Image (cartoon, rainbow, N blue to C red; front, top):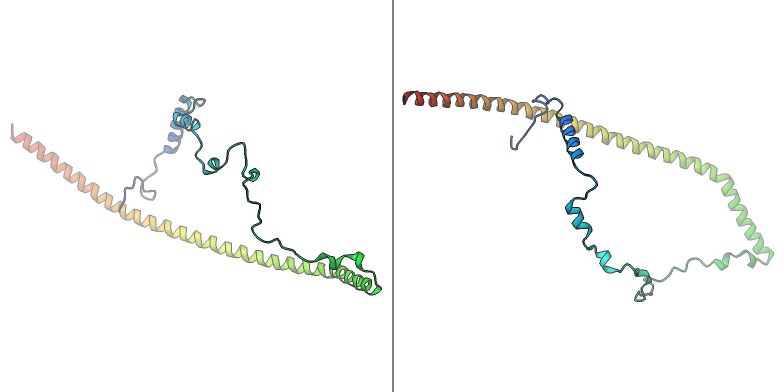
Amino acid sequence: MNGIVDWLPYVDSPVGDSRLQVENLVERELLNVDMKVLHPGVESLLGSETTSRFAQQSSPNESKRDSETNDQTPVKKPCLGVDKSRYVVERCTTRDQQATLESYLGHHESVLSQLMGRTLARQWVTNNEYMNGVCDALREISDSQERNIQDLEKHRELIQSEAQRDLAYMEDRWKETLLRNVERALDSAGGGI
């Protein structure tokens, strides 16, 4: 083992209510603390100037948009868009233009009334299939992560059982060495008398 390990969950038996004891200790300590008084470090921070670069760029009385030094030149040319004058209904003065306009409006009405329902139903089915695919992909990811977690737990258990053997061996060696050292100390103390 390469690091300091305080507790091995697969090897060591858990210590009673240690978590509850810690929480109770924290609660008792908090009862002794006056919560209305600010920590000195916080008080020193509250009295200091703000060092934000945004706060340094503008004063509290002016905003950047209101400043007269703001350059009003547009960054890029405005989009002229579609020439709407071609589609003004009032310009349809001849019968041919009115017939074309009426035909165009009739076509769009029929598209909206007849085709829209079928298109929406197909779109709904397509979206449902897509969502099912996404759910399946997420389920696969979740299952894969669960398998990885289980493999990791088995690996940890294996490493900790190996560490338990090493720790038991080192503890036995330590006890034997301690007994030998105590016996030597007793022999040397008894021999000097």
